[in-house]
Image (cartoon, rainbow over all chains, first blue to last red; front, side, top):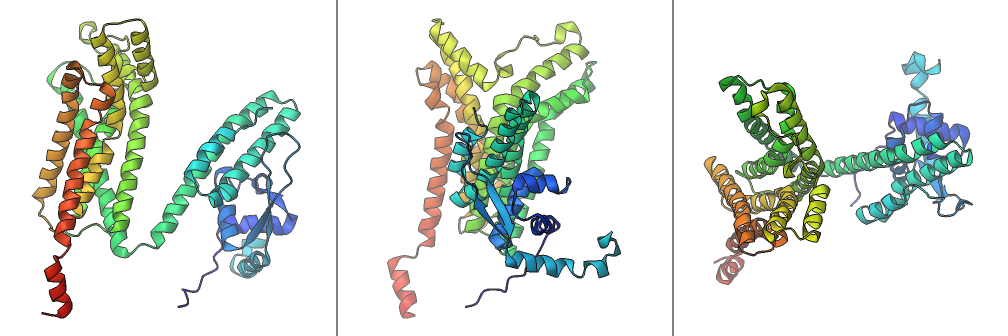
Length: 103
Length: 339
């Protein structure tokens, strides 16, 4: 039996992440936090990224292990085609609904 | 170079799934390590120290946020009845805990009414950590018993009840091992400031004002220096008893969950009587520990006796209710053949 159709939702934080990734390409979690100008917090950004990956909005890959010994390889995030479409769907009507959006 | 987060990563790997490690925990630690390596490479000592310590807060916050999100996601699959039952359980638990905490602090407030001794708001507030550790297990016991008064608990609510008991136990452990000793000592200092000299407890820290680690050290020192056996045993009993009391919520909640899953429903008085009975039984057994230790029993074992006893009672209650639920072979044959 087919399951309940999934609603594609996009929270404000997910929207910020997708906008940054679409604009700048591949980014680390830390770069996303820095680029968001305090709109993303480090304590919540990684959970949001994990959730977005589960939803299929973003994909990630592990960077080559660092030159320094013992360090973990960092994870780079990039938007998927679905993520770009969802972002477009959510932001396209925004200028009509919220005049301040384009300022 | 020493990297931050390696030991925390090992601990987290035991507690969370592989997917969570790879999606949430490892990216946090990898970025943290890279930021720290960069600060060290720049020779910025203060920045590297700041990154080192703030990283722990970030990782902890990430894990808490992730846990809350997982719990919320799980809650979405629950039925309305389950959610309402869990809500009632938590609300009753919170109310009873609040009332018991207030009752626990009343004797100190009463002192200011019946005598000339001044009692400040700070003194009452300093009693609260100890009051929570006593009130929360009893609050949870009553919360579960009153929630299951009309309907037996579903499997999901039973699991959630056990999870709440686990959280209460871990919280009590943190309170009793670190916070309560500190607030006990602060209470004495505040008392010394407000009360006449003759009525004040000694400002020197007693056993109740030592952290769990300090108390454990005292036991080792007393043993090594050849103190009389009764002194070593008494110290050891205090140490183990504090650890055991922190986990009081687990056997009490287990009893309530088994009692609540019985087929027979009960009125308003039964949960109160059952809670009073099992709590009195638990604390009386805990108090008899000192006598057993004097008689030669090991403190590390004696303190867990009340837990084992309450768990055995819970198992008996669960066994009896399961036996009542299972139809006899004759009954099941009759129901199958329609006779």
